Image (tube, rainbow, N blue to C red; front, side, top):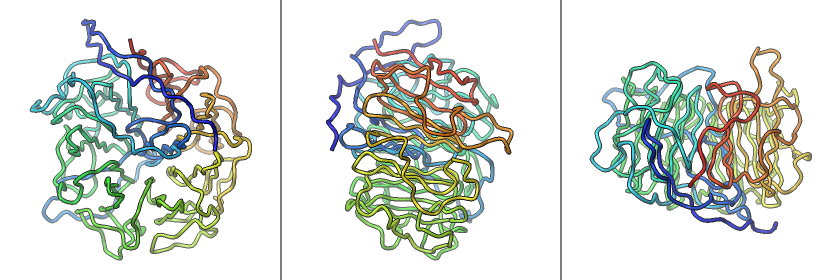
Length: 455
């Protein structure tokens, strides 16, 4: 077990409203590797890095009469699980202070004017948009808004600046962003969603509380794939809903709009959802995956389809975190090593169904963040190492230039959290400032500051 990194003082923060200077109270950000509350579904951090597993995208929505849980938004958007931390809680902790930007109890739905983010505790990178939470629990989003994913109403269709999102019953503690669909948990434990959802007859263009309070009494993660959703409750139970055309629900149904348990799964410690497959880590350290397997993304040694959750036997009982993305998966083990499978880089376009250790990363990884075409690893030292798949056939620009793990240039060595999206990534420094890079959202190959440090 590696030496535990010492946490700094708890972050606090605020929005700097346009034309108004607002003070941000608090000390330096938490220096523990991989901590965080929200983000893209696929973050994981190791226990000796003080990390909280930061899994994104997913959620629950009020069922509509006659709605059919099938189909899915077949866009090339961000894969849904991308960040994994070794151990820790599920990134929910309490939000301190009063919410700014309309997040207070009783606030009206919708958004307000432009805001400048500062002292962030969570970043959710979706399909060409992102949402962030400051340490007062205020939410803001920017980017594409064709399905209401910014939470500010249906207009404008996009925003190049952050817009405050309101309508929550209390300060937000966790947020996840994905295929145009967002979910948040507030300090009262209530789950909200907004944006696109395939099995309803509408897009929710502002945050709405979900109607599944009986099934999700104490949700700590609410994630979504392209057409299925799963929630992990505080009692380590798992419930899923949505489409089942690729055995995403693993219950033999044609799909359903209300959360139901997946048979045979209990004692869940971590959860990650991707486009059409899912993985969970049990409290005994075993890893189980199910869903589509055409590229070996389940890690079970074959590309055969399976109808029930199947153990990734090659990893034994050593898994502490899992991350999934569009067509691949990675796991973090208790010795600080990373293994990946499916189409996970190194020009492996046909997919590898067997977990392969990424030897170049060594055995001191604290957290992972997976994009659709790139992977970043946070070391216990605070360094970030990244690599990218070959994108020459897609015409896309990779978020990182190296095709093998390499130190990410332009970042300080005091990084405490990382997040990844479609073709972009973000990292938070110990001082609470956030830096982003990639080819989406106006980012560049060189990390640029997205949010100011805590004051």
